Structures are given as structure tokens and as C-alpha cells.
Length: 99
Image 1 (cartoon, rainbow, N blue to C red):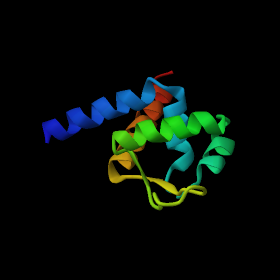
Image 2 (image 1 turned 120 degrees about the vertical axis):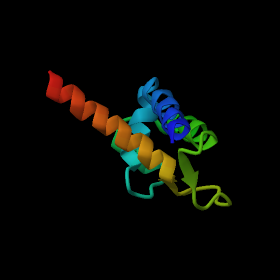
Image 3 (image 1 turned 45 degrees about the vertical axis):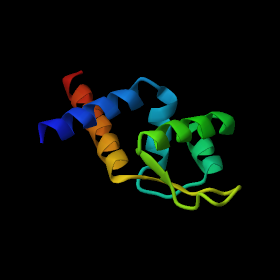
């Protein structure tokens, strides 16, 4: 159990050190989205979103459902990605309560 939570903390930290990664994760949330919609929702340019999605995919935080498609690829959070997002939200709530 400790190992799992250590890994979750590492991944959460990895996401939080980049505002682009954090915004991308929050934009996807519980939905399935294409990069263009993620870009619109997060205010990040599409070319940056592609790079961020590749980074998050390499850490198994997001997954592409239709990898074979050249356009309109669909992305969603993995279970790990959902755990990371939940951890970030909990940290934000705790921070707001202590302010």
C-alpha cells in the first residue's frame, strides 16, 4: 500500500510542476475529449496540448482510445490519472481551508 501511495505522490508532483499538465488533466476530468477541445477548455495552444498529452500518456495518466486515428484522437484519464486529479483537488481544498 505504501508503495502505491508513493507512486501516486510522485505522479501528482510530476503533474503539478507543469501548469500545462495540470490544466490538461483538469480539462479532461471524467470526460473523453479531443486535443482541440482540451486546448479550448484550458486556454493552452493545441501544439502544446499534443506534447503534454504525450508526456501524460508516457506516465500512463491519460490514454488514447483511438490511437489509429490521425485526427480527432480521443483521450481520457486512466484510473491512475483519476487518482492523481483527485489528489490535486484534495490538496487545493485543504489549501483553501487553511487560508
